[in-house]
Length: 194
Image (cartoon, rainbow, N blue to C red; front, side, top):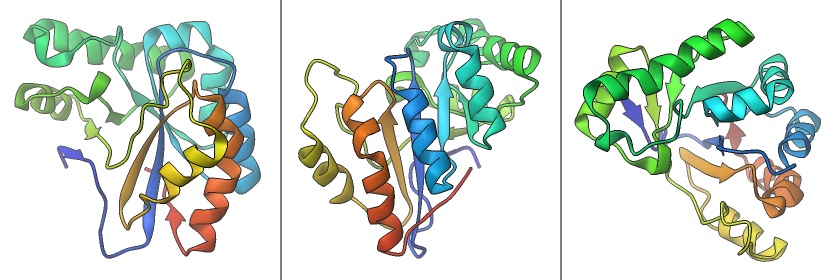
């Protein structure tokens, strides 16, 4: 598979993914909730995130979550030269493999920006590119919706095969995650690991 943004529309399953560009003090709480609910998620990390937060990355891996490649420096991949594109993916891959003993196999292009060349390079390196079917501007820490608004935004878009993109910098997401997971599970959805 070269890429995905939605899963099987005939099955009540969904994927929960988080982009980790920087740490805002919320990831440990997110991991606590996932552990409490026995749910596995995908965390897409950058080099800077790994370098600054090795204990969180180790915890993600130890608790059975998927760690994915979000590139070395978070550039717009279609604007990279072929060599830069290859380096953005391969340098982070080798770093995570050497530092954490973990082999990444999924990637998410920064800002969701991709091209056929980006998809081909990722596939050549053994990656499945994972986009999303749901996202909202939760990355803007200065413009967070209140908890009820965020809950409604997230749960109102629930559908078979959904791939959710949330940002772990959002205090709101961290606060409502347990309630969102309960909603999905109470409505028959299975949160599927990648």
